Image (cartoon, rainbow, N blue to C red; front, side):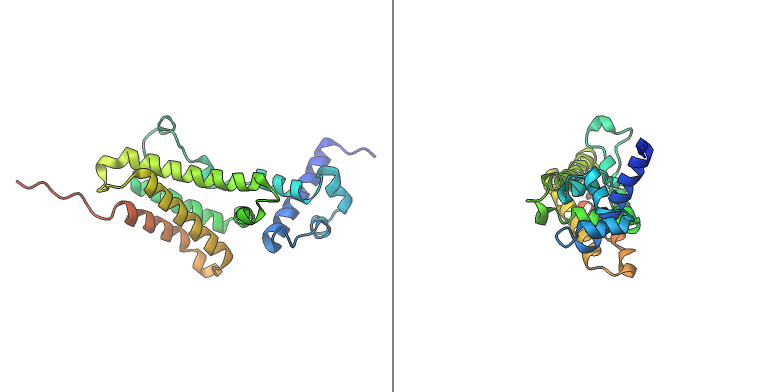
Length: 209
């Protein structure tokens, strides 16, 4: 009996959900198609109906991952109102916290943060990892430029943005790989506090009379 497009799409989504579970839990190298098929409640043949193999399945899982920072504006024209440093810090912290707490985002982040180890398997995964890191850095740099007159900073905004981006993804990676559940509730706050302490370390001195 010929399956409808809707049934085929449901099967594909079941396979993607199962692959996301297995890749994030075991790592790409240890994962096998039989376990992915079993997790989905389908046959291994169903995987090959929709995907050429494990690398293409990985690419499809990565392609549907959508994180809070994927929507960050990176052009001046994207802002209705330029956010303050405090608002930016809060947004980044909340994005990290949401990624840790929402199961789909958490699993997707675990897979993406294997990017450098999987460079020979999936160029798309590595590009995806780099693009979201770059977007965060561009956003931070833009906010710093917009707020330059209000902060006591003599540093290059792109250098500061790189520091923020590196700390943010480092904190996320450490929380995903090593953190205990109770500790992860504070990671977003730590990111927010770090950004504020980096970019607002001191107030501009008052003018002398």
